[in-house]
Image 1 (cartoon, one colour):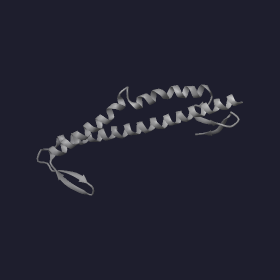
Image 2 (image 1 turned 30 degrees about the vertical axis):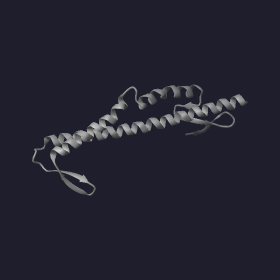
Image 3 (image 1 turned 90 degrees about the horizontal axis):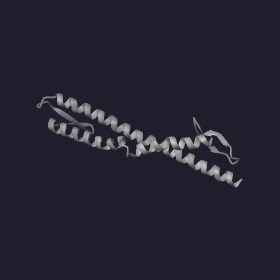
Length: 138
């Protein structure tokens, strides 16, 4: 009976680790998505700035106020933002990145839990005190 409780505790720990891994992957994917969107927006702004004449008025929104800005300065600011965002985004595409490593762990953990019957295709279950999965997925 003690062995069953220990096995149950071990399986619950693995399921908790799997849920934490899933949350971590989701968080990293949201950050990656945010930076990808910002990069696209800034690249579009840069294309628009490149279409303007040098004597065109450019305004920057600072709080509720539009402040006149030099076209060259605006162009430089957008290029710096693109450079910064690209630097933040580049590691997420690298095989050494945290997101890549987390996504690589996901199938192995899920397979272990599914083989033991602790996880079904629609989620993981908490074991009851009798060693049976409860009906409430979390």
